[in-house]
Image (cartoon, rainbow, N blue to C red):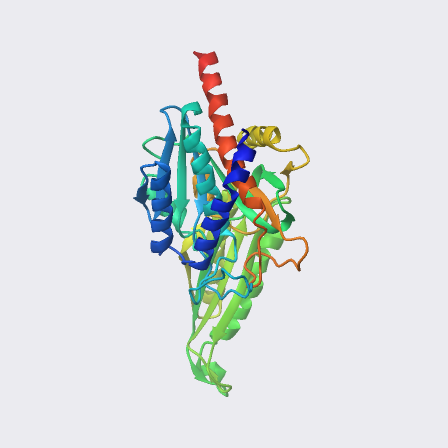
Length: 396
């Protein structure tokens, strides 16, 4: 029986897992129910799972090369309006990004891998992580040792997409997802009466000059071909019409696909803010949020290997490379920063209904993609380990 045939047999179980998780979403690093559910399901399959870094880890196979398969488990802090019978039962939390499907698919793959464990030519490490949306979960599990004991040689992750035809597999290569740095600029002046601005230092005027000056970073300091986006999304200062306030706060985000560009923008932004504020007799302080993401760069060789293996499982029309990147952020980037990694999108569009994008309260995902994802996770792992085993034998 093929991996896809077995995944289709398991489809009712995978769908059930998805719906249970969907109805009980949890946000951020607080995944108590979800972790318990995943842990117990893995135990039922015969694994010896381990809780770590707010998530769950389990191993299949024998000592040798190790491939990590990741699924994120957390929901978004929002209300669901899908109208589904298994919609969120937790107010203020909803699986509108599809992480419940990722978890269910990897549980399905775990079942298939356990059934084929004697065929594995190395180790598959299953990583069920919290806090992807808050960009904290991958780092927490890395700090807890997810890439060690045994050491991980490569990693693979899938993400469903409600706008891509169901079952289609898109493989990224090279720069894939943008970094994310959220910041706050606190501009301090000297408050005074609105009729006597000469007696104060106007932080609103300073904030306006800072906003304009920051645009020069993109226009005049990035080389042709370098990509960097700096957006101010919030400016707040003052409480009434005739008082110049003491302080203004500006908030925004930096996105880029290159670590050097990221560091340059962060450093120059602070210099500009402090310099402009000082020129107008005020001061400015830049602070960055602890939740951030580095650019995600997929390993081209691994991406090609994973794509080739999936073309053996599915038709070549079903699997293809994507040469473009997307400006959103993904904390799988912290895994990709340390080991060769491959990131793929799995189509989950519902054809006969209005299509809503990820993070929309009415978004729905086509559950027909679930066995496709489970089979893809399992077969990609088996194929990659077999290829690494052959390489080792040839080199030896």
